[in-house]
Image 1: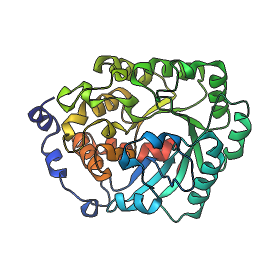
Image 2: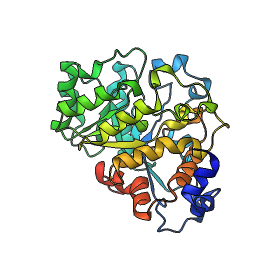
Image 3: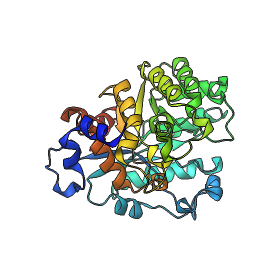
Image 4: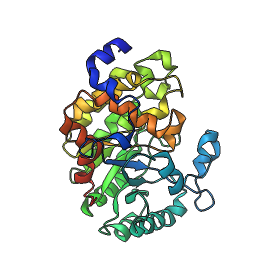
Length: 326
């Protein structure tokens, strides 16, 4: 999609949002309240995050609630913490920290998705420690790392652990390599009583739609292959899609909203207006741009959609799915 086609498809409403600050929004605007369903926080003095050792330098800083609130200044945001892949020995420490933070009610954080290992023999006891406390809404184990073998999420012990989440009223958040989305679909079929959130648009890579942005990773496959995976997920009634993460895949200062639009629009069209939620993916989004740049780009992309659909994307669906009180 070239710039001319993008602007024609979104109409003048898209242009009107460029540079608009949240402070200027009418209180009833669809994005007057934003539920960020993917907030990362970390302090390396408190938690052990092995993956950060080889991460880009911009991610090796400490990212606390104070820094988060500065990054989202000017927006009315409530956030759901997303686990940060700490060393397994720190899972309880991380979860206890974020539950306490949310209970204090002094920051934007009102709920959490904690980390854990569904295949662990002690997983059920770990889940019951947090189930029903009103803060923890789900759990994630990242599956897109190079060290995770293909098909890992279909191992019997893993499947049983994910079923345990559903039995305790918690969801499972899927973060997968694009070429393995069908494995995730099979997992949702094996666990029909567990609700799932497909993170980061199924890790759709805008570079597969626009090679001018740079070469895509081989593990991300083709645009058509990713689309087939998204469409298969969309057919599953126990799955919603998180519109997040794709900013981390594009080179900073070299992308425009229309470069992100093919990934966003395919997810929105496939899942429909009632099964999509917004995620900031801060600070990982800084690999491609600021949180405000991601929000403003998404505003442009969805400007032509109905007001009710936009309100559902920014907050309504998250309030319903995560059972939030805001």
